[in-house]
Length: 258
Ligand code: CAA
Image 1 (cartoon, protein in one colour):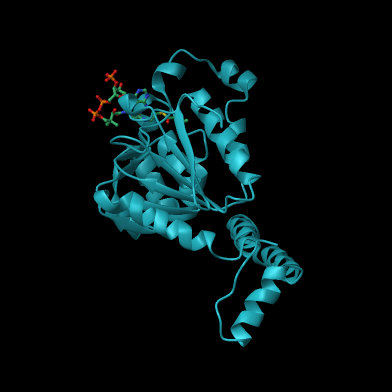
Image 2 (image 1 turned 90 degrees about the vertical axis):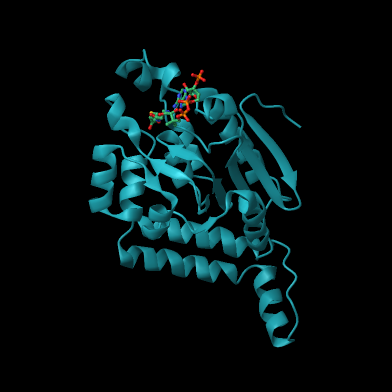
């Protein structure tokens, strides 16, 4: 298997695990780290043994943002020519479910990465926020868009104008995270939740994810049509026959992902 410099990658049962691994700088996200994350995500995406991806951070933070040292001297044209955020667009194309576990800080680019997860479990002491305004910039990897769609304009304006921290409890209240878990149990409980999803019919999970993401930026009637087609498509899977047959026979289904 590949070795990575800025992340740690492993497999456990049906889960693909990615842990940000620059703990000395609170997992500050540099460009090679983003490429590594995408490389690992895309190999899990095509690995039939992997049914869900768990993303976490090593050390005391999930990630304290984009690497400020790396970009301090950049100018606008450097960003344009590098097409800085193309890897983030690839992240949004991953079709397998991504389950995030956040402890400590999830700031700036770290918060944006967390917002790319499909489900988010948070230690009860986690702190989220977009401090970019304090650096004379703003989020560039989806922060203004994804946070606003999740929590609404009112709180997004407040949080992005002030750069203040959002506690885990507030994040829960505003629908940014699914559940708060004590720091000690965070990984264990996140893995349990991910296992549960990994045991569901994989094509159902895949098309549900696709349809929900569609709902986020599609008018209702278009989204309805999209949902319907995905619903029809599931009737061409063996797992649909198995799932319904198992119900009729009053036994547990055995899903194969076909
Ligand atoms: N980039 C580079 N290095 C970082 C970093 C970052 N985003 N965040 C933390 N570090 C480094 C610190 O420089 C420090 O390194 P040294 O030990 O070599 O000095 C180390 O990580 C530990 O950090 P602190 O000593 O500062 O730890 P703390 O507990 O006192 O404070 C913190 C923690 C409040 C998160 C503080 O580190 C901080 O404010 N970090 C920056 C947060 C930030 O502004 N993030 C947004 C970045 S911009 C962005 O993300 C743009 C985008 O949308 C793409």
